Image (cartoon, rainbow, N blue to C red):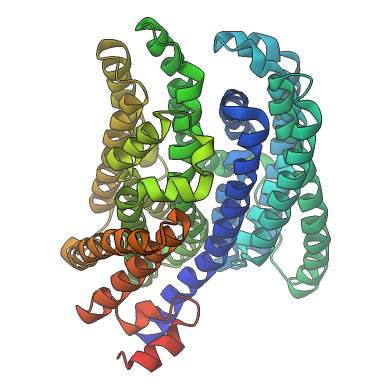
Length: 536
């Protein structure tokens, strides 16, 4: 039993490495986007986001599924001692991905004007051209990250993500500042050029580790059995995994892209004039802040897929169950209070992060309302990410596709109703996103139940964290109001409110035994904290 717990703990600890890197990169990206919005304004930021929405769809089609698919298959092959087949998988995947990404890069460069016109925003064309070289570089990053993750080491991926984001931020800000005086759309294009710079240096770093690791691996696995599979058979195996992962990611990105396309048309249908400003608030404030905690789930899911896949292929089903329950519990403990905190302290957080000068009259109230009605998506999208990874690790790769199609179709219908029928502006997108995230979560859990005997104890997973969140929400708000009365400083009061809220959440969770010693030791220095608090 102890061995099983250790294996489950190792999954979360490897996921924690990526989660910490994800937090750091999100924080860098978050800090980067604050001065970026000052440089290029809400209009330029709308061009920047729209360009990335289109780029993300093409990136998904060409290479996005590679790290997850490669890590899953390599992990399975290594678990069975089929090291030569794992090498063959790496080579075939690399050839396929690099060729496809190069073609996609050329398509975006030469088709930029036409694509921009489809979205009724010709100013985005320069941003698309600026992003096209990155499409040709990203497969090299994805291949090496997937390779290391397949060997259950997340450190190279984590460090490369930080390198990529730092250079992306520095290069993007410099080029945006340099070009924005020429035009707002060129400023937005300059901001995206930082992605190419970041990707290039991250590739250099990973390549150094990759080739050194490969030399050592060849010596270690010199006696491996020669692969009996043809490249065609390997390709079929790769496509069986990578196509469903790519379709799910593509559908998710297409849904976001349809939000981008439907919003201006829906607003224009009702005669709105401040379309770009509202879109900037929605993407630059609401989506940016809510995506921050979701990044933790995304990172943990990257470690979940190869770990659960290796357990399943060895037929260690009980260990796989332990891993599934642990990742769900950890994400619940993190994502639930994040959603509550963004709801309760929405206005002070916005003022602390952006300052009152970043909002025109009435805009702060609009942005605050977005968080009050929509922060629940933090929890549901986080659980969706993890359950997606669980299904892929269970070899049920088609289930997330079906679930995404069902939930995505309903979201598009709701967008039409809310935007065109009711004229609800960005609130309509938020309402449809709430339904979308809940449906995805419920459908994925149903699929897990259908194809396994795993059952999540939701009373254990939710009731105690919810009680802790209620106390946290009340105390954080009271602490903020009290600090405001004493200091009149929004920033200081917000930090006090967040600190009191986080502390009270953790204390209540411990008092009502919502987290045990084993779970506590999964966080950095958790074992020492457990000793201090005498938790058994």
